[in-house]
Image (cartoon, rainbow, N blue to C red; front, side):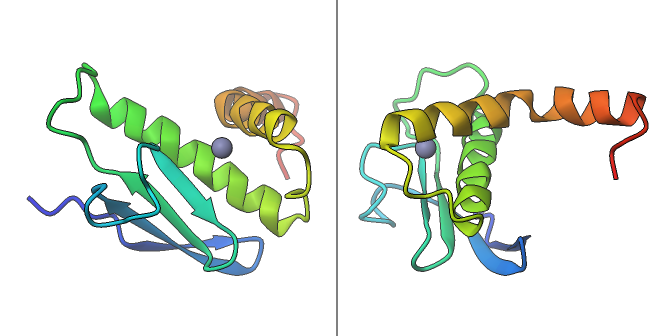
Amino acid sequence: MNTDIDMKLDVLGTEYLILERSKNEDEILGDNSGYCDKTTKKIVIAKRDSDSTLGDWDAYRRHCLRHEIIHAFMFESGLDSIESYPLEFMVDWTAMQFRKIQRAFEIAGCER
Ligand SMILES: [Zn+2]
């Protein structure tokens, strides 16, 4: 089964390509679960390794994809010069809380 995502995503007016690749197919990926390349406007998410012990790979893959998409939004907002640790913290926090914030906006009637 071909699980490559290969889709385009508009990030604040800039087109990003989202790809799902194995470590062999993408040499930059290494042991990471994904990365966001602001220079090539590309998000790459790792395919499941044959030795992965995660019970719900798809949930993990979506978690990684959310994380990298938030990176893209931050890059396109000019927030890519923040030091790595606080940036990763902010990216993870935003990716994890986004749906709850969106729901709070909807309940309060201020989502737009
Ligand atoms: Zn990150």
